[in-house]
Length: 264
Image (cartoon, one colour):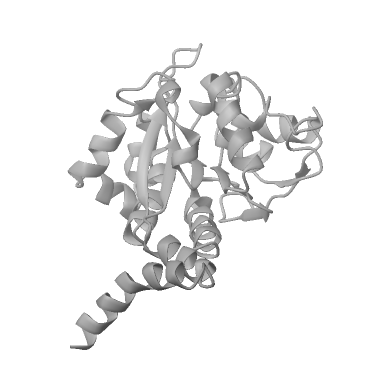
């Protein structure tokens, strides 16, 4: 009986609000927002091989950990990429030494794999349909996202609408050519993290990147922040959320969840 009464009250509230001249409009909106499933757009790379011939793509831990954390919390995820279709996974990220529990889970989860195998082309994405955007890293995003006009527009439109914009590890490279409303670099004066120069050097991967991410962020005026190499570290500056390395992907996802729940 209690359940039936609750359901009846939920159905009647909008009608009562209308009958009362809209006195309970705010309450109605809050209830409708609470009932609405929030949507998160994942933007991944389509780039699979750097000029020196090394295969690259998404660092799968940085996709898998946020994907599962967000889906478990009831968020709906859409995955898009510049070209659409199958998104490349960096083969190095699947090696045993980098295989975390979420990576193992990903390769045993057919629906999750289906998301990456059938990404939507960025040109077919309507930003207004989503509540937040997340960019997983890997070296791939450094090559095809910084110059991608649609990706740039997505970041600018989400940020200007007050929606969370989140990126981890090498993915903040996508911020390189994003602009603020005054025409200055988007990251100027903002707290931003990302893969460090020392991590890039230690990983012997400087030949796989078009620029050093830390240097680019500093050159564009970011208030660059970092923790210890290879340790989880993430920062928020308003709705901008960034993480330092693969180990930071979970922290970034937690900050996305907190940001979205605060507006439900």
